[in-house]
Length: 220
Image (cartoon, rainbow, N blue to C red; front, side, top):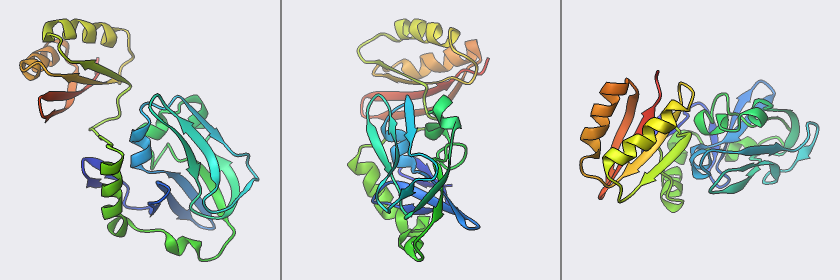
């Protein structure tokens, strides 16, 4: 994986940077998916839809769509071809696309029908500058893990925030990830003590201006 402005991008795929999608070629088939920009842009995805298997899709046309709390997007094909398979796992768990866009969160498989279209796709080295510009354009913020929940606790004392965090964590399954934002200057010290006490893990701490960002994972 290659890190661009705190966001991770796969190195074994080819990118259509205009449409924020990627392709990985396997024999005569192309596995297609959305890139990190789209995976983080929408927030936790709530639904995914696909065109039917057997549909012939022209380059630039819709393969389906994704929807989250902050963004609805059409997933557009980087190639002309026939859809041979869709990722049914995304129907039951759309957040696979958020968490693992280059692996279990692939979108569809396509049989390419136009020779040479793949030459317009870019390896990560050639695509990195444009992908970095996209991150800035859309104000995408990537962290160590994609959060299941977000807590924006601006103007709240950390003691009260920890009560809310305890309640959220206690009612969530193991592996749940929380993005907590606080402007309390004692937040980092308090969160470290909380992590030691509860044995839940702080995956990342980041300060941006007067705001502290914490990525917290329930580990027990």
